[in-house]
Image 1 (cartoon, helix red, strand yellow):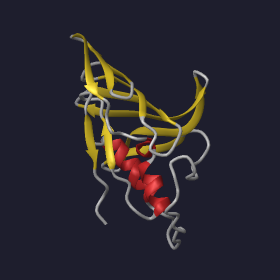
Image 2: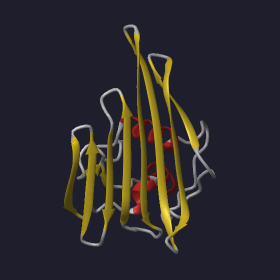
Image 3: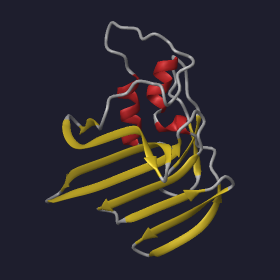
Image 4: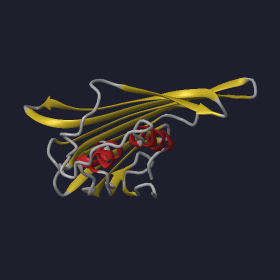
Length: 187
């Protein structure tokens, strides 16, 4: 299931400016959809007060001699709990083949702060992924079937807006190295 910050970002990106209607491009791909260069920043608010921020970036890069699509997201949430300030951070990076329906090549997720630190690293071949989960209680390694997540999940909200349709699929989540369905919002 997508994280709350990811859903907030998706809603913000999917909404066209008031009074405008985007031209639908059913042939748009995750590689051709227009997006800002560099990081996009979003404030996260709780009861009208800023509780943190999220930044996201999707771009092609050259790694190990080949072009890949890289999706990054970083989130910081802070809250006052009694006299104590609680801070939680999460940084994710997913790397895909740089082509429409490109497969997931790797995933790295680091969570720090209140609630404990943990890191998930996933390296995927065509048939399986090697998952390494490191937390305060040790390191666990397991092999999982290669997820069906594709490059379209790198920027599904913007791609759906460009196509004027939904983008469905699965997304690997950091809680457990498994794939969860990505359910487009209703309406």
